[in-house]
Length: 121
Length: 121
Image: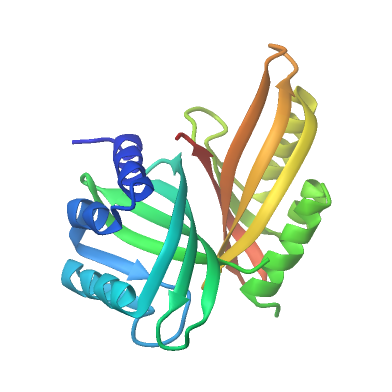
């Protein structure tokens, strides 16, 4: 079983290479829970198929110009990554510079929860 | 009762002004739990007096040259801050550039848990 530090570093390396979907495919547990800081249908998603669906929705509806991944930051069974995303919402045409922290909880070598915190200051 | 966003922004503003102890004094719950990514006696501390004691130990044993606080990042009842700390351990004389994420959980307008994730990549 890989340690949280090892998983954090492999997960981070994939994100730094722009391979976000590969990181999820490889490390999401089947019962993964994903929590976004928003109201509505996509605030909490349960299960790898649902979380992959959100990912597919994101890529279909956003044009990503650039991403930066920083970290990992580690404590016990959790690690965090920090993302900068330069992205245009296709529907509105609005270009945004997003900054967020992804907080990941590891159990039995897999990510069982991901939780995104958006920068508000 | 202040919202998590309001508390996050006030807490961040105090940290950005270097007023870390004031931030704790004002926002730590009496039953606050503090979790550091280390083994040993200070890994998990419970209760405001114990957490204040850790803080006092930190300031007594480190010379802080500069700090930077970034954020807050918010999701639900949690917020995160990112810290850069330029510090010398007094005992060893070793100067370090530390980078960490502080993850705070808010309940009833107070911080009931703080958890620090250290940069490892």
